[in-house]
Image (cartoon, rainbow, N blue to C red):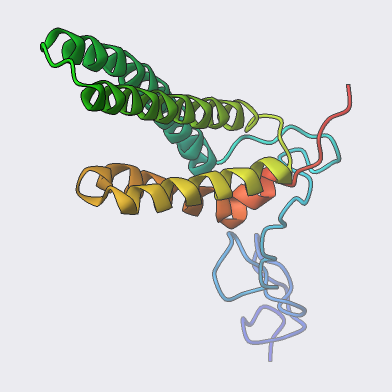
Length: 194
C-alpha cells in the first residue's frame, strides 16, 4: 500500500471530507437517522404556558354561545308575541258579541294562560342571555348550568316535536359543544386576578 492510495486507512484523505470514523455525518435532516423527535408538549395553563396566560375560547364554545344568544332572543321575542296575542284574543272575543258568562270565563282563562306562558318564556330567554354573557368569564358552574338549560330546551322541544325540531337540534349542539374536552378546559381554566 502506498501513501496516496484511496483504500489506505492511514493515507491522506481527499480534501473536503472528514475522517471515516465515529457517527455518520449528515448534510441535512434525513428521516430514520438520529434520535426520534419528541412529541409536542401540551401547555397546561393556556397559550403562554404559565398561570394567568390568556387562552382563546374554543370554536365549539363560541358556537354554543352564539346559539344561546339566538335561542334566547327568539324566546324573548316569542314571549312578547304571546303576551300581545293574548290581549288581541281577549279584545276579539269581547267584540264577537257573545255575552255568556262561560265565554267570558273561558276568555279570561285563555288570556291568563297565555300571559303565564309568555312570562315563563321571557324568564327562560333572560336566563339563556345571562348564561351566554357569562361564557367569557364564567367557571364550571356556568358550564353545568348551560348543560342543564340545554337539556330542558331539548325536553320541551320533544313535546312540540314537529315544530320544535330546530330547537331540539340546537339544544343537542349546545350540550355537545360545552361538554367536550376543550369546553371543559375553557370553563376550568385559571382566571386572571385583577
